[in-house]
Image (cartoon, rainbow, N blue to C red; front, side, top):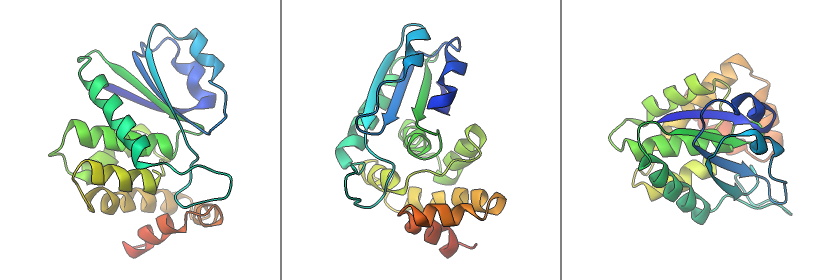
Length: 187
């Protein structure tokens, strides 16, 4: 199975890429991206929640049910065969989509160590900053408690080593726990 991760502005670059399945993760109320009108036949599932990790007035947290739906779709995609090309996107292709991709890889290969999964995510999307709450729900659903969350700290450190100012942006947007995880692990 091939996986592509992107943001909404990049969708048009993948119209001719042989995408067979799409996982869209959008803010509630956001319209479906028009770029999908130019894609070939594909099966698409859309999840709608905000890119947050703590309750925020007027916004919707990713839930255990959202992650269960994500993993159900992942099983369907994996059963589709070797020629499957899954495109996962959120608004920027940085947080919700990369967390989802990590969980789908963990589900597809249960014995694969979580650090290897995040190394692959970093190759697919170097600026990945996976949403911690999605990962927490996912590691519980996959029976890998503590493993996936511990491993994402290295990806957070990679991003902060290139762009240390990103930590302020993350903290200012209610996601300080993610920066703290990176710092506890060695920044």
